[in-house]
Image 1: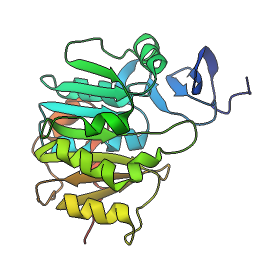
Image 2: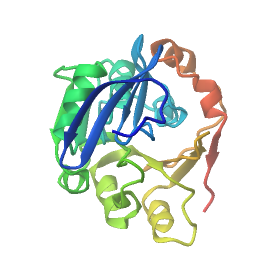
Image 3: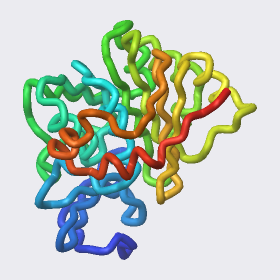
Length: 251
């Protein structure tokens, strides 16, 4: 086992066909890692429903504009995003699609992922599973598909974007954790513009680019969304500060 570059103590290690899965603790946080170098998920140990990474928090921003009845999360990790959604929307059903059964086991045992009728987890390849979702069956799709050191190429494919769009309701949102700003002359950007009348970006401190696509055109500003204070009480992630970093894509 290599010496971890993530600060803390390795408190659990397991392995499957795709490699190692590590749980690393420091005094305040718990981290899921696949290689001891990159953090796949990070939670505050005292508040496991609270995502720590800025990009994970930023992925929740569309909650300021809509109240979903059903959300779909592609890629579980430690479950910080799914757990945050579960807490943020008490009446919402959260469906997670995760490739690795051991990741689900660790999320429940070490990261306090709720075991609830409102939290459904399907073990499957998200690329195939999203194509099999019923049309207009979910209000939001959060896609965060990464292995130990790189983003899944599925997230850059036009077919994947089309399948996500097909599964979304008429005013649904796609939230995509991407590894760079899409090339405006590339096929991904063209497909996003084709499918989503409203496109926004969030550039995180770790250089992740969160892409938001909404199927219903709207203008998301001014900043003072009426229930922003209520959202902060439900899930204190710094909503106002995050929303100030949003930018709209002009096609």
